[in-house]
Image 1 (cartoon, rainbow, N blue to C red):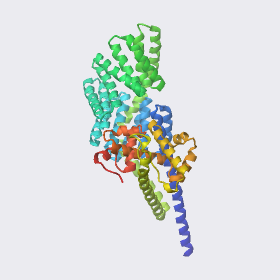
Image 2: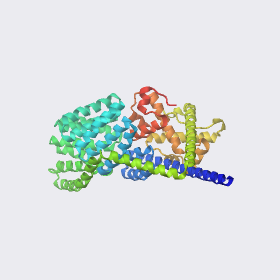
Image 3: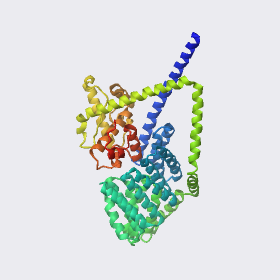
Image 4: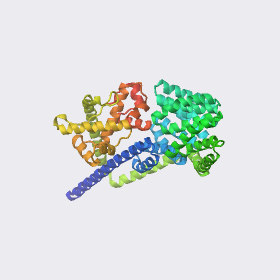
Length: 514
């Protein structure tokens, strides 16, 4: 009997060791997945779409079953929109919406619906686009998110403009402009004006469109938003061409063409090429012919019958996939139940106890980190007037050497500088500090028992909380940008994961997460 008990204990120890190894691997995989998604998001933010696509695809298998999976899918969808690959974009966006719908959060659901509307808009499937954008507006109203409402109103304007219903389009874009202007979001308000210029062209109010776009273009040049600048130049060229002012239109169409060639945006390049052809035909027929040939080459590659068939397939299957996905989840749950039964009840109990221990340990570390972040805020808040927020680390200052304090201060300064540039990940921090990622991880681990990526994320989240508390006039989208997030839903998910409430709920209720 004693021998039997010994063998049983050995098996329990073996299973617990297996659980430890498995958990360690999962944790490492989670860190890698988050780092890759952040890297892809940074590349998207600087318009390096092909590199962003490859990085996001590399991250996707590692995000399965994690909260970050929806972020990765959404990022893949919007990258493919920029690359004009609408069938791929629809696939990822649909998967993202299914995940977001399960959360019941109207804010993230409205974002996913807006992405779907943009995809079907780009693919000229206007009825589907209208359906998604109107559903998105309903969810944004439930979320009480004016920033998201402005985005969706602008998308609705584009959909109705494409349908030829420009009077309705004008109503929606005026509402989007009103929301952004009221909130003091000048960059967004100027982009709405650019969109309004297109609607005015559709209403044959060309002189008004010209005046509007000439106000917008210098601002976009100053901002460095080349995508929006190229679109605005295309629109102004169209307004001038419609007034029979071909020579005035040429430089704007040429500027748009140069921008879209550089960005690899063939969808908008087609419009610029056509405008150049029409503007140059009388004055320079040979040059006009070159643009016409390029126009014909590009237009056939934008939207083929194959991609149309695929999008129709996605639309037809959208309602039926709910049951298929539920069935798949049930089958997967049964397989896991059988596997757990094979490993026996004691293994399950051991894993549960270990996970509970890790969860409590993480909660304690988070609480200690937040407390010590507040302690170091006073020392480092001179780094910027109102944007540098509560960043610090779980350290005992009495035990730190002067060199440790200087290293910590330099690390925080570096992270803040990269956040302001919108490109922030552990590799960038290490490079800026003139050390390898391994050295940075070892040094931070010794001082604060944190990985570089988790430390960066803590600083971004505390920065966000500080901005929400001290700048109620700022929108969630603006705060996300100041915390180096290019996509507001990703920021919302990260904030809720850290503090238990969304940024909107935090601002509205005045709650203070524990």
